[in-house]
Image (tube, rainbow, N blue to C red):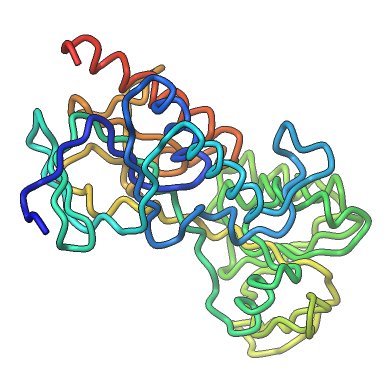
Length: 315
């Protein structure tokens, strides 16, 4: 086997809606894209049971099935989809160097980063177990709140996003228990006021989840007051986590401009990063929307930007 670097026109790192959408557009533009799936082939949606808000699926679709659909479409246009994890980069350019699994070296004229972001979890055994079986633990109220209409739910978080998700759930659920770990919110005054003026949101300060109850689905949670030590049980059928996301962008630090959290910055109305020929799509750059449909849209944009970049250079 040759150990010389492989040269490709378009390398896509990541395989969620952004990565596969970029692959579809890049392949149709004859860029012959190579896509590496990463440590979680299909991205976060493979951990989601039902997806009902993605256009084109009137009866809904499971997250894993939807990712298989997108993968098949990318393969139909001859995308080279590979197993592997990008572990190192050298973006000094103009040809960008990438190493896969610390072994294989690839030289790419353009790179589309679609590595996504991972929701933060409490780390409780029953929380993670019920999350993995689709039993009522989720990190996206906009995605999954619809399934809890008319039910009592709990939400953990204290920032602006948590307040926004709590008020969103309050439109669907008769009672929302909002659990705040400290004695105050981290959110802006305007967002706190919105929560406090919503009558069916009950805020529990100094409160943490000790356990999640239920065999196959959430039937309640045990909470503890970290100021008094008092424990209590809340009867809820859904537990929403809104304690932040961590973008999977660590290997690009030092190369690409990022915000304080690690989301990759890009030019306005573009997916171009600070390095020519490197583009970003999906949740790796999106700290606001984090939806499958918005990720797919930016994947399309990144492929179009890569095509124009190559065309301008005579490729």
